[in-house]
Structures are given as C-alpha cells and as structure tokens.
Amino acid sequence: MTIRVMLVDDQVLLRTGFRMVLAAQPDMEVVAEAGDGVEALQVLRATQVDVILMDVRMPKLDGVETTRRICAEPEPPKVLILTTFDLDEYAFTGLKAGASGFMLKDVPPADLLAAIRAVHSGDAVVAPSTTRRLLDRFAPMLPSAAKEPRHDGLDRLTDREREVMVLVAQGLSNGEIAARLVLSEATVKTHVGRILTKLGLRDRVQVVVLAYETGLVRAGGHG
Image (tube, rainbow, N blue to C red; front, side):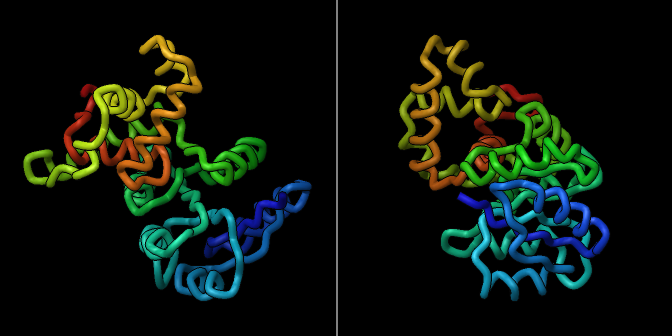
C-alpha cells in the first residue's frame, strides 16, 4: 500500500529535497505540497493524504495552528512536525495540537522514512526519552493538576492500565514496560490500546501529554 505524503514548508528547496528522498521509495508518493498553513488546508480539502510533514515556522498560518485545525477534522491524516531544534517550544505545542511526533529538519533520510512508516502504521515516532526531556522542559507551561480538571476517562482505567499509562508517560517502550511488570509485550500492547480507547486518544504521544496535564506524572517523569 502506498503512503500518500504531503509536504508543508515555506522553503521550496527543502520540499524539493524531501520529495526526492520520498520519490525513491516504492511505498511512498508525494501527492501534495504547500508553502504555508492556509494553502495546506485548502489543498487537503481536495486531496487524500496519509501523512503530513509539517514545518512549524511559516507565514500566514504556522504549523502548530494548522496541525490543530487538521487534527480537529474527522479521520485526519497523521502529522509529523519538522523542527530545527530538538527541545523546541514549537515541537511541544505541536504535540499538544495533535501531531503524532516531530523530527529535526536535518534528520538522516533513513530515519525520516522510518518515521513516516511508523506514523502511518499508528505508532508514535518521538523517542520516549526525547518526549520526556521535552515535557520536563515545558512542564511549567502546563496547567497544574489542581487547576486542570481531571480527565473523566482516567476513572475508567483499571489499576493495571493506570500503571501502564504512567510507565508510557515516563518514556518506557512496550518491551521495557513488559519487563518491568513481568508481562508479555503483546499484553502491554493490548493495555495501551485499551488506554487509548478509554481516553479517546490517538497515540502514545497524547498519552504522555495527558499524563502530565492531569498530574498523573510530574516533571522529572515520576508518577
């Protein structure tokens, strides 16, 4: 199955470079491009897209607000934020807006291709350690648990699911969670799937953000 990719960046040269890399892949096709968020939203109305590579700093409408609007639509494409800095406020707000992950613009081509495939298959592509560092840095921007209303879905989680959610938010992979809780990796994957369903979340990135926002996990990664 071909992954339909859209490139959204105001730098034509960068789009050209990405397009050349993607065009060489048998399972990918660049089906659309846009130079800013406004144009991206217009193009998306007429084009079927699976994954969007989204720059954050653009004229007219930046990548974060564009991502927020796209992710508010029913069955939206997955969004990968492209950023210049690893620990970047734009990357953080992009994740909060609904992006499935972020990549540095100078990422090696093999890593970019792996990220697109991972996002398309439903996985989050922010390395857990990176997500954690990012959240620890921007945790002061999050509302405190006292001010933030608790997410209703948290009460529907079993003790085990809550335990798994905390470990996901602390940056552990399914394999690491399985080892920690002495479970099979398949069982952990099932728990993660149930957590996503009960909380109405799309992927692990959103689990991490919600865990911090509700105070389930605090800066430093401790529950």
